[in-house]
Amino acid sequence: MDLNIIWFILVGVLLTGYAILDGFDLGVGALHLFAKGDRERRILLNSIGPVWDGNEVWLVTGGGALFAAFPHVYASVFSAFYDAFMLLLLVLIFRAVSIEFRSKYPSPRWRRNWDIAFSVSSYLIALLAGVALGNIVTGVPLDKNHELHTNVLDLISPYTVLVGITTVSLFMMHGAIYLLMKTEGEIQARIRLWVNNTMIFYIMCYVSLSMITLLYVPHMAEKFRQQPLFFIVALINMFAVANIPREVTKNRPTNAFISSSINIMCLMGLFAIGLFPNLVPAVDPANSLNIYNAASSPKTLNIMLIFALLGVPVVLAYTISIYWIYRGKVKLDEMSY
Image 1: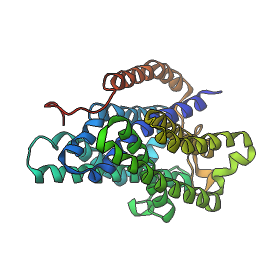
Image 2: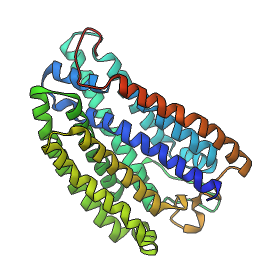
Image 3: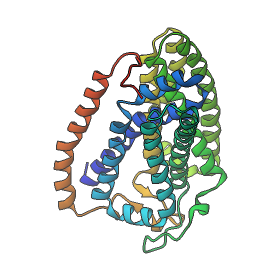
Image 4: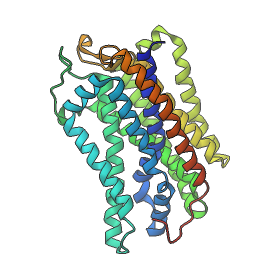
């Protein structure tokens, strides 16, 4: 295994970590307006309050790894999709501000407006992330110089919107399961219904997206036809999703959350297998950016790998410690959001 493949896997692991951790944050935000009354909304906010900013560290780390290992991808994609990334950055900022400002003033109107900002920004982040993935799957119009001339509207198509909606449904299910772990009593009983409804929504979206991908984006299945062993990832994914209602019924929300996390891992794995060795497929395959023509020099990859091997365990240890410290059910007090 060469350095280019190692970095492809490392970037994938970091982005998968972000999808799992910030995924339930975004799901909680998407479900926020379904809570009844100020107290329930505060419970939802405080379920993610101690961890949401730490979860976003994985996005920063993944973006940094992408920049270090594959700078041509960073240059082409971020330059061409500048407007889209500025919109994503705006809603990320709006979401962070809404979490911090929401409980600073006791006015019902003040809190309601920040509740709407928190929920809408959570929807938009998940939707934009899904639309971006959809464009990577279908391919983008890179020229022979690996330059991309496009605008925000060019990113919108029925397929990319479906990927975006599927991402929203996935994170809503993931967030509902997380809330099941963090709540108790009457609100937990209602969240069980959220889990059932979001899971139905997700399965409908996922099945539809899978069928359309196989019909209209057949190159994503090429690796699976060449190497049937990769179908194991799809089988694990299927069993993980099937295990969620079983664990919820048996009142084991932690196991359900683990199954939901495995589901996200498998989805990212399926995406990576279908994409490899490309990073940004082009409409004309000859112009695609892959792990070789988009990579830094071997010396740079070697040096940065050393830093990654030192830094990623620190991020992992920080994440584990925060979740261990703030384990258990949410309890509101004077220090809560």
